Image (cartoon, rainbow, N blue to C red; front, side, top):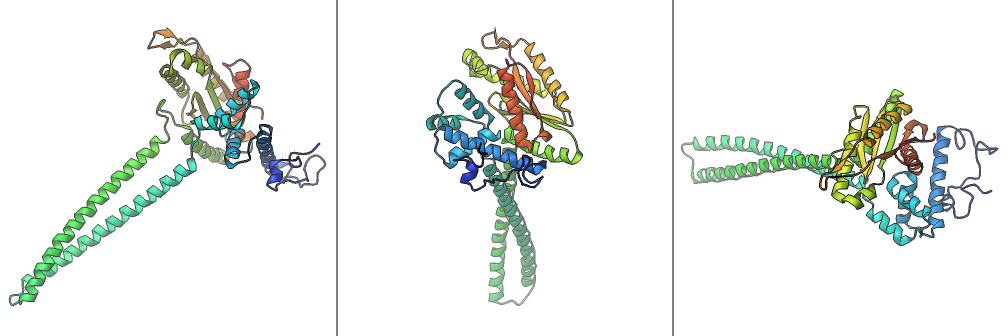
Length: 374
């Protein structure tokens, strides 16, 4: 049987990354390089990811384009779990995944964003503002010093009793120049104030870009930055780190029956419920749509699952009323998946494992929390 890199049409082969030497099962690859250890696990995970992307493109007869490769990468790397579940549901229903459907599904997905482009824009704006503010402050200081020197010279010229016409004219011109430089100094001060206001607006925009406006929780962008930070810190401190995905059960039914405004209120209720267990070591964010993501720092996997399960039980026992119609929504529940981050090569793989566990909880009847397989 051919290995993934040896199969015809494998993306590894197309990229020239195939390697017939395999570690572990009789191959001659050195231990720790391709078959054992952390490096071997990372490489193996990359091979699996590339193989999944290849199979997806080929099996559904999709064109090998940069756009399709990026979409497939998001689906199989865990970066776009919402689209991954759409594809899985469509496949199980026996519906075709063609180019038109894939383009529409990816275009309608609101969980994706160009984080790198946004960060680059912010960096450039901040750099420009900083340089402008520094320049105007220096120019205003130099102009003020120049004014003082000119005033001193004018005073000296006025004190000369026998100055001729040229000296008097020079004094007039100097006074006119003083007036002009004072106006320039005033304009520079105003420009500096505008630059400060613009910086303040930029900082507010940056904060707003990391907040979900419906729930007030951090959004996916903010959570990913938080995950990277806690991943480094927990790794250095030798502390546990867990991630969890939560998804509202039968949310489409809520929207279809009660309307999108009522659906938004349900999302807020779930967000508030999850927020009650947050602290310095537990964080919740809205990942997109009806999905939330959580981070548990220095909390063992079993305890993280237990905390999440308590929220689920409390919510399932509540009776939530549609304020517009005074009709009950019925039982509102969510399903979840929890994963130990350090059981996987990196946080991205841990998120995908948590999402897989969430999907398993959905398949097993919903309204439950599943733990990812290590």
